[in-house]
Structure formats: structure tokens, C-alpha cells
Length: 86
Image (cartoon, rainbow, N blue to C red; front, side, top):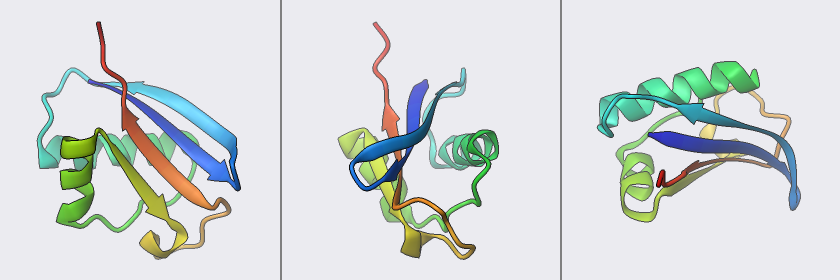
């Protein structure tokens, strides 16, 4: 699995990273990936609900807004997107 994660300020990418994992996509692995990505980007972990995983699985991305975080987030949006590997 290869994931492109980015932090947005307005319409601009403020920070991004590519994350790779050998784990298959499950809700548990999705949670682990997000924790690792948040650590890499040095941001708090968002509150996860089942809809976040469903969006990622069905639409290959999830958007987290400031309201999805308990702690403050200095960016407008946190987006994780599945990068299809060839």
C-alpha cells in the first residue's frame, strides 16, 4: 500500500509525504498507517470513525478537517489518498 498524505492551507499543499506499508488494507492497518503518517508530519492524530475508513476504501481518499481533531491543527485540511502502484 502506498499513501500520499498532505496538509492543506487553503488550496496550497503546506506539507506532504508518501507512506508505504506492506500490510493489506483493513480498518486496523488503516489506523496504524494514520498514526505513523501523523507522526511523520508532526500533527496530532484525528478522531477516527468508521466512515473515514469507508471513504478511503470506496473512494481511495479521506479528508480530515480541523473539527476531526481534538487537539488544534495549524492547517485547514489533512488528506490521505491511495496511490495506486503499477
